[in-house]
Image 1 (tube, rainbow, N blue to C red):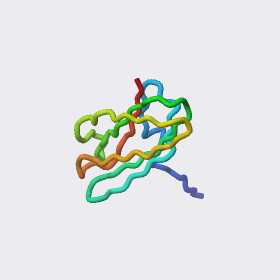
Image 2 (cartoon, rainbow, N blue to C red):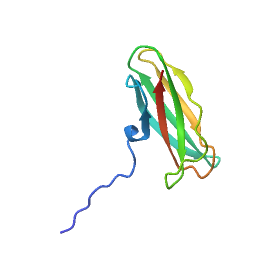
Image 3 (spheres, rainbow, N blue to C red):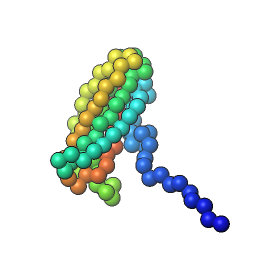
Image 4 (cartoon, one colour):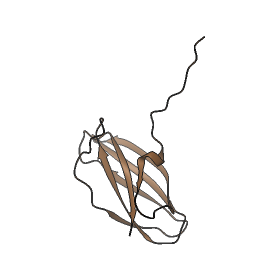
Length: 107
């Protein structure tokens, strides 16, 4: 008797999010990506469950074997009010990019 075991190679939102410092109040609620014009485009939706305070984000772009492509992006400021949501978009710097990590930091 043989059975099938489901395997998922799709990483979770938590696995694709890198948190630095106190960013727990900012929840990543959705992540999507598509290849458009030969470049990977990422869209991340976040929601602030805490007090309004600035946080910073950036995308880290990687190729199919996990090597970082391009230099480190500059941190971008993000201020979202309590219980507010925001949609953040990033475009890969090179056609060899196949995946990304979303990084969050605070002061």
